[in-house]
Image 1 (cartoon, rainbow, N blue to C red):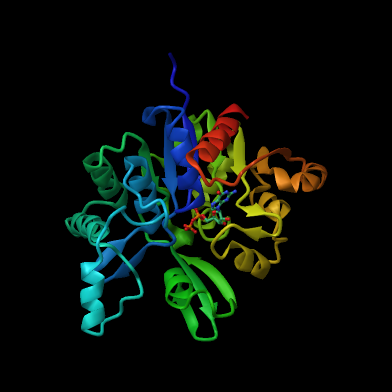
Image 2: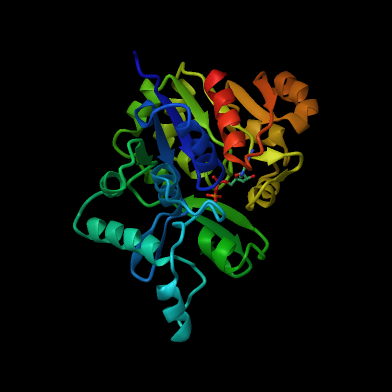
Length: 310
Ligand code: GDP
């Protein structure tokens, strides 16, 4: 039987939850994932790629599902040690998690590209899904606050998102090329799915790579997105604050506007059914409303079924 190739664009929380559902329905060879790299951050001399890691750990079945980051059952000896000696310890990384960050950093120092290091780690963890970083080049999501420009991780994790956003950019995206294989995935996919991830800081840096946006705009393949906004807020994270800053309505309509130039269908939550007509009328995008809140594996599976069926 011919394999159906579905391509997912992903951040590090909402879409990986959906991928857990997808994995119950189709085999790893039938889909691939392009990950955000705008959250990537260098700390303790290590190259941390939070979204790539969550995606990899999720598919490998070792993610800490309660937090939706890190590895389940991990210990935190390294961080506790840093705390004891008075070093920065706000970026919480477990010991096993650190070992993969260490491995990635080691491979990068040996001259491998990020996409090659990613494949290496996927192979170790028996991840049969092809996972690609959007780009091998550094793209840094940065937030301007009254304290100056800072990396997204510093704004969101260290400062707990408390500083007013004065600007946002994706440093390096203007010269970034897509990682090897990414354009082929977009051009050969039978369906492209933008998972329920933050449209500004998770999907935004992927779309900021010109080649990727252009390929999505050109493709004849159906592009579907799932709204991470339910009602007038996200289920987690700073999507609402950042969409407001960008003068986007914090609603599924605002999400549709971000993807308007290539989106064919938006899946919104059934609680937002009333906004469907507005999206269809104002943007000409088909809307499907279902339960999109994924608490249990069954919720994830049901949403994945809908996504595969659209
Ligand atoms: P990040 O890298 O941790 O920011 O993760 P993502 O961008 O992938 O995910 C964060 C977004 O996922 C938030 O905007 C949430 O509203 C959304 N999200 C998380 N869980 C769910 C869910 O169960 N359903 C839907 N529809 N959205 C979700």
